[in-house]
Image (cartoon, rainbow, N blue to C red):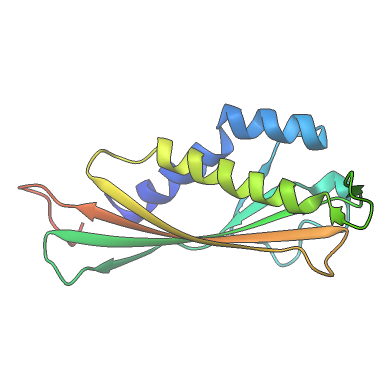
Length: 159
């Protein structure tokens, strides 16, 4: 798989995932916007509820694995929502920003969209994080995807 095909496979998987879209519509009244990189002149405004939720995908990286039968692909995603609500639990001394659950759901649904698009001979490791302290109304998440492509006879590690 070449780098552009790799990028398009997962960009399209996230952008067209119905479960992710239904979640975004139910919680934000709009679909998730997926950016493939950013134009420094026309960045989305995370402070504007109408611009979120969005995902920015970084440039994919391809590297050789130590084992010549594998190729490693890396992809970074930055996820942003905007919410100002704070929910109070039945236990009145606990106040939780609503964004905590929303960003964790966003991360989970994004990962599910990526997994659904993976070829059969690939595996995935994901490191994710959510920053929910002091960020209201913005809530950010990030995901580092590390894909391992197991090569089959006839596939070249250089293509």
